[in-house]
Image (cartoon, rainbow, N blue to C red; front, side, top):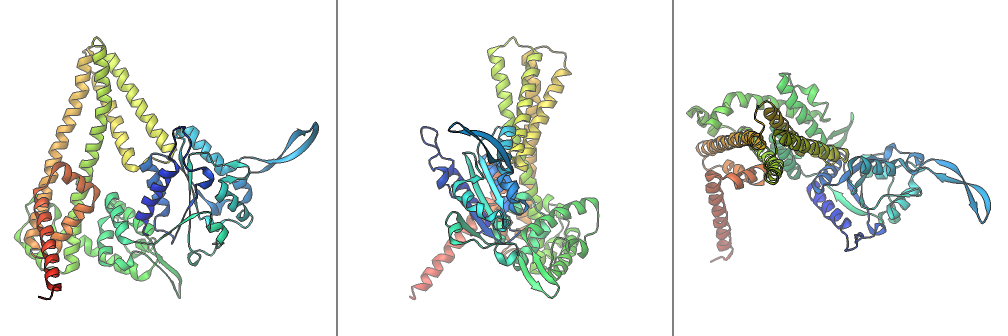
Length: 507
């Protein structure tokens, strides 16, 4: 399976493991909660999906790489305890709590979140002294005498032996205690993730043309040559920052992330072309509807890779703006809650003054900070949620500042000040939504003019459909162009299928 399928499977499994009966007991006893073992090549996103699962389920995450652990750190250190058995005094050996188990309790104490995932990476690379204890851990969820707390599911990961010399092959007894998910690299699954995260379009455009370069590990005369999903993502991040600073991108930089000479040369050459296309086609003019006929003619006569790159740049720009609108929409929807809470309190106590409103808004701000801090300590705060919480906090801070600057002492007037700020931001978002809709319209017009009869319209409609932000944007705010072309393409597909059926009848 690919990494996206593995993620959904893990989410479903953890939901089952955390399911309780009417008495609050877990339906699957802890001894029957088999750990999941993700087995796959390095750099395909095994660790990243665990963060996403924790964030989406709203539970905590504790991660450890088992290659860093000795028997003592994993199981605890021995110490002497004095006890009395049948009236006789004796000294016995006991063990301190495992560092791993202690970390779970630390996270629960700091975050207040009692359920989570214990993720142990490189589980099949444990030291020889620790290896015998892993059977007990996998079966009974204990390190030494200390058990993983209830409500914590265990997910492990490792690489096949051909990728890591430190791998110790699991025997049947060990495999019989885990649920094995074999994960393979898959560009299409990664591309969906990359688009949602806003990964540099030059990377996804290049890989659309050269899918075989997405993941490659081979042995050459110079040693191991490798290109991984992790490498592409890290390279994409640095490209964005280099562009912001106006720094040159060359083979030396690319080669620090992609360890394959041929792919480094081809990507660097493509990146130079990509920058040339940006200058030649004036993306902003196309999206504002002011492009020249020469741009349409040039695009229509371009080679396939140039057309695909141009379309990718245009979609990347529009989808980035769409993501921004949807983030703003989510933030404003979240702001409604504290405003409703203040209004409800004022309805109960209509004589309240501005000081009471300031106190309520301050309490809302503090509550939001604590929530964000709790999720951050539990490692379950996504980048999008972090931005949303910070935006809400900023709104509450501005509302308090504006109210404090006024001379009115009325609680109702103070609330209206905050509401006015909210209404202004809603109006700005509506204006931005209309602007983005207009740019999306110009994108469709350009594709119609430049690539009439080509596959570019199919690519555009498909990408808008599968991308989470753009599909939600169109569902929420509409796009007549998308609706029209989507229906045309669906009709064309149905006609094509019907024609194939007729031909198969051999009439």
